[in-house]
Each structure stands twice: as structure tokens, then as C-alpha cells.
Amino acid sequence: MNAPLPDVPEVRVVGLPQLTQGFDLVERLDLPMHLKVHGPLEAMTGERLAQLAEHISLTGRGGAGFPFHKKLRSVAKAAIRRGVRPVVVVNGSEGEPPCRKDTVMLNRAPHLILDGALLAAEALGARTLVVVVTRNSTEVSIRAALAERGLSDRRGQQLRARVVRTPERMVSGAAGSVIRAVNGGPALPPGRSGRSSESGVDGAPTLLSNAETFAQIAVAARVGARRYNHTGLESEPGTVMLTISGAVARPMVIEAPTGVPLPYVLQMAGAPPVPQGVLTGGYHGNWMDSVAAHEAVISKESFSAYGGALGAGAILPIGPESCPLGEALHVANWLAAETAGQCGPCYRGLPAAAGGLSDVINGGGQAALEALRAVTQAVKGRGVCHHPDGSARFFASTLSAFTDDLAAHVLHGGCGRETYGVLPLPGPEQEEATEESIPSGEKLVIDWTLCEGHLLCTDVLPELIRTAADGFPMFSNASVPQHLQARAQRAVRRCPELALRLERSGPPRTPEKKPARAELPPGGGRKALGSGRG
Image (cartoon, rainbow, N blue to C red; front, side, top):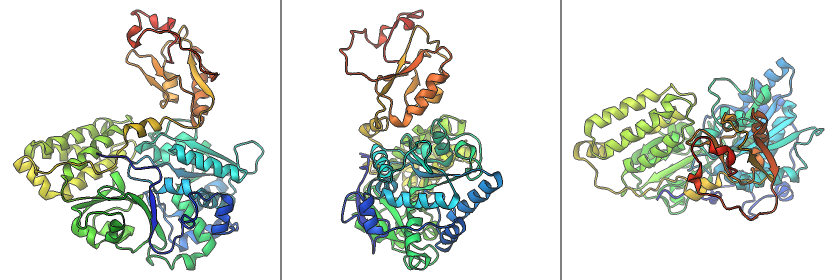
């Protein structure tokens, strides 16, 4: 039930490949193979690059869909006005369980993404490039790609490039969370509004866009606007990367031109011939009923016209044999657990909404339904970030798309169908993997004779240091991941009692015999202990 997707699922293409060109030759296009497949790329001025993006109607492929040419011009104007160098950030964060298209591109075609990012960096005069990723496989691939190009974060280089790793969470991929993580903080929403094009990384104007967006501009720069526009719809030219999962025989990523019928790509993945519903745009998206899904074509405009949302390209059908409300409840519980814990509408409202949906499913009747609608409405537009809004949209769409099932549960106590858990969610092994990364060779060590439990370290490094039930910090003895090394150093500097330090990891030692976890003696016995907590 609710099995997680592999990092790199099967990849298929409708028509001629553009982004996935060369995938039939090798598993990963290193730099020589990338140049052999795609050819060289000439530099462009900022205005020429913006004109190209405008002529091909390129919008961000991360879900928001903001026009890329407007971002470019906004960053350029801000940099000129302030007299500072801008920063380019590739957002390769993919913390949503049904999304894999960026992970596929970062793993198999990292140089196409870097082409677009470096093209933008040169056009803008940027001297800093940051690639943000969420998974081990993407981190390894993009670090290798930077090394193949001779790029690093060393001082004195014309362009300094680095990789930043964020947790695999829903809120980590938002623009504000990404900027905050790049600046050394936790990958959480900042709690204040602001445009990264004006003030982003280190306060500089920042061009932040999705990984696929940079790959698309790299393709367009090679073939030109006219040829690029020959593929797909006139109003939305080019191809899109889609992740198809849910009730399908083979979850896959598909590159398809806009205008291709939705049933065609669903059939490629082995979806039911007549799905009772198709979730479009992922877990912050909208459901289409079976009639709408049969009529829609792959495009933002078409999906919107039929009540769907293309978003980041996640498409999830469910079959007629499963209870759609039960399937939605699994997702609702996961959305509630993904809260950043920074505002009431998210921290309290989403668990209340998930509980309300459970009440409706389990025979709560009309009163439960009205309570669910009230709490869903209450969280909209009141959160620190867009997570409450996107989750509320999922709840509202579920209630409007499956009215017959809703009536059966409200009026008769159930629809008589099982819930099979076909919508992908993280498994235990996947949740553990989010804590892994390339090891730095250092580990955090605490001196319990000094620690006073100020907990400043937990604010800086929540991925590794948490607050225990007794109010003191708790952490693992494992090596600090490379992507968290800078923040680990910052946590050490923040400790007012100088109780925390970083040490090089030595060879394994025979562990000393220690009492069980419940060994802490009452009345301050913690400071005499040297367990792996700090």
C-alpha cells in the first residue's frame, strides 16, 4: 500500500525527444556524451535570452508557472539598480512523493540543466551558481557533473558553483525555503513575503527556477525559437515532463509534447481504461473526474478548463475498484504531517481537516461533512507559506470530484469499496534515506558537563539535532552529511556554553557499556553522561 516511487523510474517519450535525447544510448549523459548528443552552446546577452524565453512562452516548470523572461528581466534590473552581482539557483528540490521528473533529469541529463543555468549566469553576469537537490542520487550526479566541468566553490574562480541539499519534504521546495537553505538556515518557509529577484541568496537579486525550466531554455537556445515552437501547441509550445503513478501498471516519467491527449499518456503507463478520477498537479493539485480526464489534453490551459492543474507534471489515476475518499485520506494524513509547524492554520488546521475527512468516511454524517468544509475554508489564505492553501485545495477538490462516493458515506455510512493505497507516499526506508548523504568525515560531539539546554543548535540544524522530551538536545553519533557541514559549524558557534563541537570521525571503537536510554538519573544526572546526544 502507498509504495514509494523509485528515484529514477522508467522513462518514455511521445514523438521526438528533446530533454530526454540520448536516454536510449546511456543511463547518464556525462559531459562528452552530452556534447555528442546535444552539441555546443553559444553564450547570449541577457536581453537576447529573455527574448528567446518570451518567444517560446517558457514558464516555470516547478508548479507556479511564472514566465521565465519576466524573472530574467526582473533580476537583471535589480542587479543593475543596486550595482551587485546576481545569483542563479537551480531548484531541483522534489519533496513530493509523486514527483520524479526533475530527479530523472538531474540523474540522467545533469549537463542539460547546467547548460541552461550557466547560460543564464553568463547573461546576467552572475558569479555564483547554486544547485539545490533533495536526494542522494541527485546530489551525487550533480556533484559529478560540476566536477566534469571543472566547477567548484573555491575562491578565485570566475564562477563559484556549489550544491545544497534539502530534506525530502513538501515545504522544502518552496522558493522561500530554498533561499533560506542556501543562506545556511533550515529549509523552511521564512514567514515573510519577498521576491528573490530583488533579494535572495545573501541579499542579492536571485534567479531561482526549476531544474526542468533551465533544461528547456538550453534546448531552445540550441534549436532556436522557430524550431522549438514547431513542437506542441501554438499557445504552449514544446514538451513537458510528466510523472505518471497511482493506479498504473508501470510508474514512469514521460516526455510529451503539449496537446497530446491525456488518455494516451495514461495508457502508456497502464492506467485503467476508465479511471474514476485522475489527480493532476500532485498533492497540491486538483482531481478530474473520468469524463474530464477523457477529454483533456496535456496543457495548462486544457487542464485548467477541465478542473485540473498541470503544476509540476504529476498525474495520478485511481481505478474504479478503490474508495477515492479512502485514497485521499492517506494523502491528507501525509499532508498534515508535512507541516512546518510555524503557523496555526498549518500546524492545527491540516490535522483537523485530515481528522474531519476520516470522520466523514467512518459515518460521521452531515455534521462531519460540514465541519470538514468549515476547517478547510478556515486554513485558506492564512498560512505562512502555500502549504495550507495547496492542501485545502486538495481537500476541496476531493469533495467536489467524488460527490457520489461522498453521498454514500454521508447518507449510508460507506461506499462498500476497499482502499488499496495506490497513491505513492514515502516508505520507512525512504524516510530514513532523507537523513543520508555524502559523509563529511566529521561528527557532532556534546560535553554534557557544559550543556545547559539552550537549544539554539536545534534551531540551526533541525535535521540532525532535535529536542528530547526532557528539554535537552538529542542527536545521532553518525557522521554529519556534507550538505549540512556548514550549518553544523554554525550550530557549534551558536552554542553559548561551548558545549558542542565537531570532531573528525575516527576508526570504529569498541563501544563502552552504557545503561539503557531510561538511565538518566533524576536531578541533573545528564551532565555526567556521554551518550550520542547534544
